[in-house]
Length: 447
Ligand SMILES: Cc1cc2nc3c(=O)[nH]c(=O)nc-3n(C[C@H](O)[C@H](O)[C@H](O)COP(=O)(O)OP(=O)(O)OC[C@H]3O[C@@H](n4cnc5c(N)ncnc54)[C@H](O)[C@@H]3O)c2cc1C
Image (cartoon, rainbow, N blue to C red):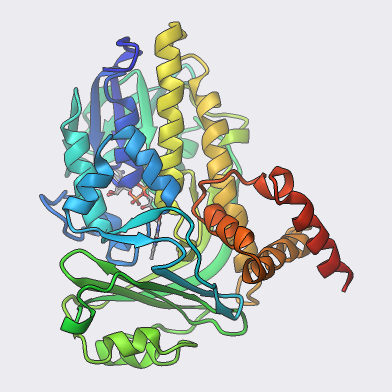
């Protein structure tokens, strides 16, 4: 039941049972008599890869803010992650980051993060959400369109023609699903979208850790500076495995077999990854993923949008995955939704105007991820699109913070806290380090 014990409606529908849908359903449970999740994919029992979330084969880091939001939505979930074999990684110490041409020095940021495969995160969430009051998760159920009457979303039409009604509908069908396009074609929505050609390609395999690395909890993130385009991530995950994703930008092809993957790893700016996998056994097939475009649908400023329809997760905004933000953004937005619903249940405010309130909150999380990734993407000439007018300033801010992080422990900790979204964006301009930061920024811009 919701904290107030009150309900806001009889039924809610969530389209898409990925991370976005599951987090949203956790926010809705108890506030509606029933919450029905619909996914066209066949949903596995355990932590298996599935076609409908093909990106799940690749490294998925859950940032601290995402973990905190999921914990608020589903108390005890972090412990569930650990019980399923998540590796406990101390941020600043176990997660080694190579960016701006060098390693970040070590520090104690004061918190750990979990490291699991994405199918494991999803299966644990699915089990927890399925156990919430009133929640049903239906796989192999393809949604054809949202039904809208008098400017209000009333439910969904399935591809077999069946219509399901609901007081509130969440679209968490991802960025490539057909439903948003259908909604516009049906004349129920008008909004602008922003696209940036990022042309990022990933190749991933999982390896059994050799005996001598079994107790090691270290992961590496290589995000070299231009003109170097190759990036790579290695994370320890459940079952004494590493997951390794290597990638590139532009039209280069990523490696296509394990031998080529190892060879590719040997060309990263530090031998850390290669040293670990050169004699390791691959325990998965190689999977590739190409993401051509970062897209955000600016529904928060849409001239036309149905009431009672909430876009969540990648359906709203989908950025370059290299910065590991997608799951966190959608978890934070669901957490905010939960707060809005609780308040409405307490005050008896009902559902009117919810979509506006929710979109304001969700857009802020999406904007944060968008700003960071787009400004980092635009450094590469391979990224197509007009650079924003504040691009030079954004780069100067990022470079200054990175330099200060090399020199000063307080800034190092702050940088990690910002990356993990546990501090608000404005901490640089308004927090206790603001004056020192602006002095350094001015100095770097003058030189
Ligand atoms: C290569 C790669 C690496 C990534 N790495 C990270 C990372 O390190 N950290 C991180 O946080 N994020 C990462 N991401 C991003 C992350 O995967 C997404 O942001 C996140 O999964 C979004 O979840 P979602 O539920 O919104 O969408 P999705 O996971 O795409 O789920 C959408 C669901 O909707 C269903 N669906 C679609 N259409 C219909 C329909 N018509 N009817 C019924 N069901 C439908 C699909 O079957 C699917 O299950 C990565 C992405 C990629 C591509």
